[in-house]
Image 1 (cartoon, rainbow, N blue to C red):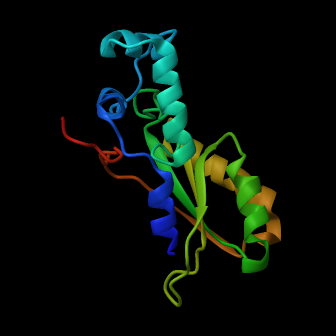
Image 2: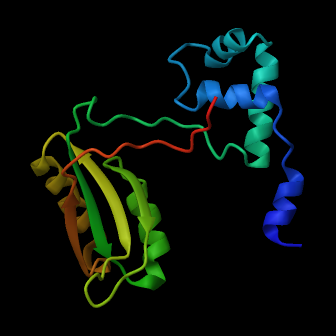
Length: 170
């Protein structure tokens, strides 16, 4: 049995409520003190039913995660720099965890190198109010990494790309 076949046996077939939950939340949860209760009212069901369904979808993988997705531009962080690092492969996991925990880094991940033109294998996004602030944060990361970083660079964003997850139609 393949992994995908085994996985499909575990996942329940979505019913009408599951579909309505996804449609109602795919653009985000409402800014409400009790969003699950608000959502239950909108869908005409009990809050416990909404929370149980969402929990089941998290457990079987239909929902991978629920989190905050800040709009950095609206918060005043208009300079966005993807810092890229050449880190020895044997320490990249430890370095990645360390860099990913920094307050200045919103997300950090490993990617393959494309030698000889692209030696970088660690990516860490840094946001700031201006480019100077981003460069200072990247300098601080460079100081933290010391000789563990063989080289690095910063790729600044020049435009905003639409960021959304998968959407289903109503």
